[in-house]
Amino acid sequence: MMLGWLFTACMASAFASEEIDCDNAVNTLQINDCAGQKAELAAQEMATYLAKSKSHNSSDAELIKAIDASQQAWQTYADAHCNAVYTYWREGSIRGVMHATCMEKMIKQRTHALWSNYLTYMDSTAPVLPEPQ
Image (cartoon, helix red, strand yellow):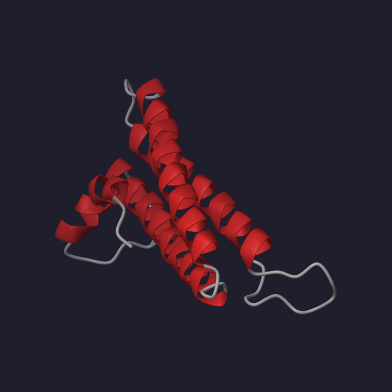
């Protein structure tokens, strides 16, 4: 699932001629690229948990429809929230990393919500997927 907000965050990496060592990023483009990469990895993990939530509950069409509606509403909220963070920091070069970091945090929270609501059990039965970090 490619999210529109990641396009901008990852543009620098599309044109990079060498791989960036994110542990030693030294300039704004590298820092933004690394933040975008982390958000992209979080988005990929969320897509896995969303798909598993739906496949695990595939016998309940009403629930699948509700999960889809909640995901769409969440995406709208996350985009609006992180765009507000970007606007807050709009005067500085930090705005890109602040936006990407916001999205990473929002995505990780959503992934955990998907896991806890649709992939765990009330008893001691093991969850369908491991708890996301």
